[in-house]
Structure formats: structure tokens, C-alpha cells
Amino acid sequence: MLNIILFGPPGSGKGTQAYRLKERYNLLHISTGDLLREEKAKGSPLGLEAKKYMDNGLLVPDEVVIGMIRVKLEENVGKVAGIIFDGFPRTVAQAEALDQLLEEKETCIEQVLALEVGEDELVRRLLERGKTSGRADDMDEEKIRTRLGEYHTKTALVAGHYAQTDKVANVAGEGTIEEITERLAGELDRGSNGEEE
Ligand code: ADP
Image 1 (cartoon, protein in one colour):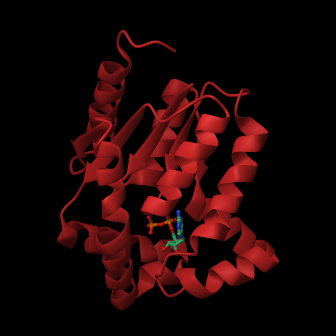
Image 2 (tube, helix red, strand yellow):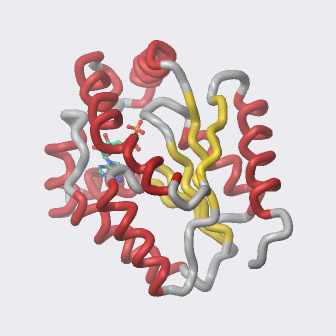
Image 3 (tube, protein in one colour):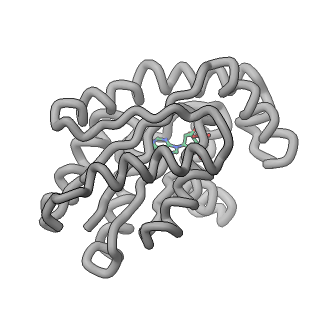
């Protein structure tokens, strides 16, 4: 399986690029942000619990998110060519849980593609998205700053977790959407060259 993590701060374009890579490489796209928003919209107990954190720009507790991922992997591993993870893992505990869940299924993460975008550009993009997305966490600069803070204190460490295995490629996340997709695809094509399935 070609399992990849699309990594980067809020506003770095993970959702947009994950969609394009999923189409190109025939992958299953798993976005924990989308899954949590679906639960929130349904008003499920999990969604109501998650809402308290999401609306304030804070990370949802690990056990909630890991539980959701476990279900998705149970449903899909073995049935799809690969998975692109978007917005997960966001903590080292989530990364460790993911490694273990994949190992139980005799597969692993092939590559981590890390999108790099400057902080001012991130804030600008998120505020712009907030005008149309209807997302409370995109409309308020203070919540955006909280999310960037969560990224720097908890999520940035995830890159270190995978750096030990030499699987991280940094990709410049500024430019046109098409240019960035080509950069990411270039890394993927290089990374999977000559490797076993
Ligand atoms: P963005 O990358 O723009 O912040 P997401 O849609 O990925 O947007 O996430 C929105 C919110 O959902 C996050 O701020 C957080 O509250 C919650 N969330 C999403 N994924 C995770 C995760 N893996 N762990 C904890 N919380 C998460």
C-alpha cells in the first residue's frame, strides 16, 4: 500500500492537495477534520464532545481521534491501493498509535510530505477561507493564532517522529495549486522508485 501523510500547519493547503493526490494515485483520503465536522453536523456524542475543542481552535483529545482512525483502517486496509492522511497524526501519541495500527495490518507509512508556508500567509489564507467556509475557527484571528500555537507546540513534533525513519520530504507550499501538486508528486515518484510494494 502507498500510505502517505500530508503534513503541515493549518492553512498550508493539505485538504486541497490531498484531494488532488488522491485522484492522481487512486488513494483513499482520510481527513480527521472532515470526519470530526461530519460528526459535529450529525450531533453525535463524539461530535458534541469534539465541538468544544474545535470551535476554540484546540486539538480534540487523542483517544477520540485515534478511535475514529481505527474504525476507518478496519474498514479499508486491504481494500484500497493506499491512504493519504490529512490532518492526522497531529500529536506524537497519534503518530505512535498510527504506526501500531498499520503494523497490525502489516503495512506502514511510506512517506511524509510536509508543506511549508510562512505564518503571515497562513493567517491570510485562513481568514480568506473564513469568509465562505462557515467555519467558526476560520473567522476569528485569535482562534487562528490558537490553532497555530497548537501546531507549534504539539504537531510540529510529529515531523521529528518520522524524521528518524528518513521518510520526511519538505515541500514549498507557496505558489499555484498546480505547481505545489507537481512538487508533491515529484517527491512521491522519487520516494517510491525501486522500492518494494
Ligand atoms: P486545519 O488544518 O485548517 O486546522 P482541520 O479541518 O484539519 O483544519 O481541523 C479542524 C479542527 O479539527 C482542528 O482545529 C482540531 O480541533 C480538530 N482536529 C482535526 N484533526 C485532529 C487531530 N488529528 N487531532 C486532534 N484534533 C483534530
